[in-house]
Image (tube, rainbow, N blue to C red; front, side, top):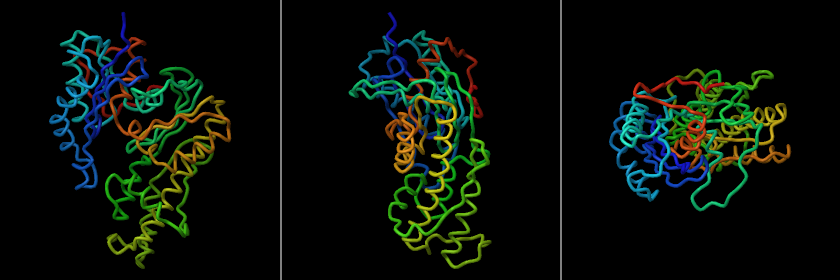
Length: 355
């Protein structure tokens, strides 16, 4: 009899993760080794450094997940799911190699999973001791906002996606990192900007909003330019000044600029997601991806969703950032649908979400 348990491996970027998930919902074990401190010195991810860190941590993380799950020798597992893309090629290969080895040694099916749908399926997850709750109801709209991606899809059923809109340039999380660096804040930029913005009191700056007409598309590249101009002005320098020293900014300047940037991003993301929900007749709304951990964004969308009479499902912050439990949740449905990988399974760094 099937246990419905999937062991999942995620290594698409800078998190080494292994999880065991039951029937696409209940987390049995979820272990993540983060590289944030490793990359903070460079203010961004160095691909070769990330891949080497995955090599260092993959087996210890796998063993810890097995111990936490209480499963001896991985018995009682139905399949091995693994992120095949998108992501960093070297990082992906570490996870794929581990998943292939595990699947073949245990004679289990290997299930390739798109990292992006993993962020969507995080909305189905329940922690080990969490009470049962209703699953997201179809049809629904889902927005994923992360360091590398920003998009909105409509789902009529499991694994059925219709792309409504996406960024035409930078992802929201990437803009967070770059503006955070410009303001002299720590990496990653998203949490640092949110923390700095909480200290704003005047709210006297306003960044532009790229509405992109009536489309659901996004553009955040102009925000970086606007941020540079605002920083130059705060420093009393011409807008075209190339070298800006954030150390000369006052703490209040940083807070006000962080607030203005965050307000612009949150305004556009919230407006487009709620309009998509309204215009598609959605019965529920999902918000996922690392930027979804932003409290202001969650609260703003929740307020709008309640105004539409719709439930908003947002994973807890630890499940918004990269993890393997979300791959296990998506992998369960891919497994049921018959998705299989073989010995030729390779990294797909530019993989798109199938629509």
